[in-house]
Length: 239
Image (cartoon, rainbow, N blue to C red; front, top):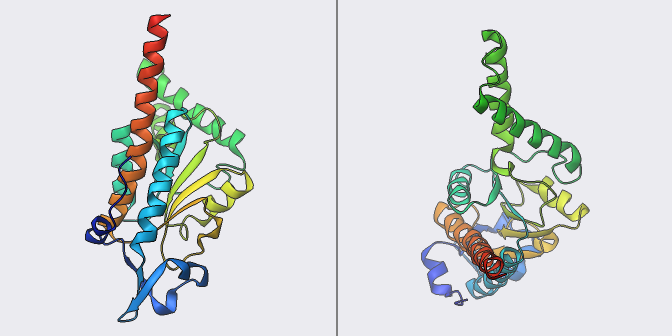
């Protein structure tokens, strides 16, 4: 894996943190300086920590582990959804569902219900219903898809989360800690990075910054998973 160049991160605006009065005390370790009242993130640390996170994401992919990307904030939602669809990675971008990790058995029932409803709709099983009942089923399916579409393929707890904006997604961070699930996350200067397994100090508001980090992690994971799957397929064909 090619090491990340800090100057490249600068071009995408990863260095711009929050104003001085919004800095979290435990984020100070990642701050290079304060310029005109705005914190400037040390991109040498960012590049090093991003590379560590990418290496971990690759290991997840190689071992066919499950990564779920969590990003419901405006500005990140669309970027992450598009990337995850492109690379076939699980995502939750509408909102974090309380109990998604800590009450996963119930969540799994909801996912299975959604998938069954999709099958019934596709097979024409609803065609014999009265129109008002059929419309009600369509509305019910739409509501549940809004929440669970990105995780439709999940059959068990994910092995790791990749989170954009841990302040907004604080419930996801708490649940991951309770279930001892590894977290990768963009940590801006206004949050406590200590609860994140693989923190990536960077601007979590700017679109270019979000896109850069999201692509780096999601592609590292997805590419490694694809390569590993191809190798397993070749081995089976030789047996």
